[in-house]
Length: 180
Image 1 (cartoon, helix red, strand yellow):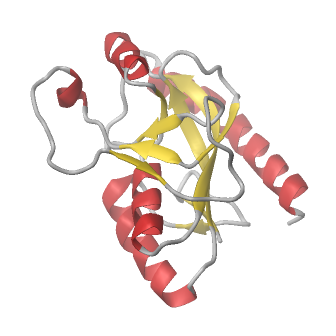
Image 2 (tube, one colour; image 1 turned 90 degrees about the vertical axis):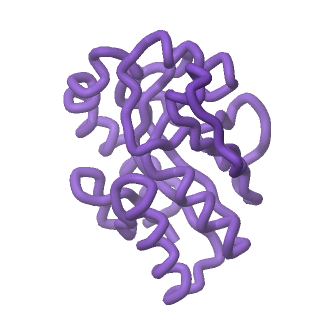
């Protein structure tokens, strides 16, 4: 099953699951119960913490849920903040980075550099929820992302500027490689 966030990031070939961590978890859980998919592929855009470039294409099955307060040593969490799901379609290693998910977009360059220090390369608001649901139901899952912006003061403007082209790249790649 191919899934996406929805609203401005919708695709004809993908089922929308919602924006952010909560909507994604609730909607995807319902879809999994109803449709019993054998594999989940999340497609969407992401912001780079600095190493990845605009319009880079990333596939991964690794995610984290790290809030900026954690980086500043202002909080902790008793739950596991890193997930990796099994998938026969994505190899392991540096080519498949960790995607951080939060309901907030990082706009501070210093925090972006701290995320890189933790080994986290990019952010997408939904992916941690996707992998959480996949893990709960023992479903292989991965994500396919195109970078739209750097996580800095210009994040929102660059996202708006690059979003349409990033969506075209996603659609072309999925349609070509999955023969949709």
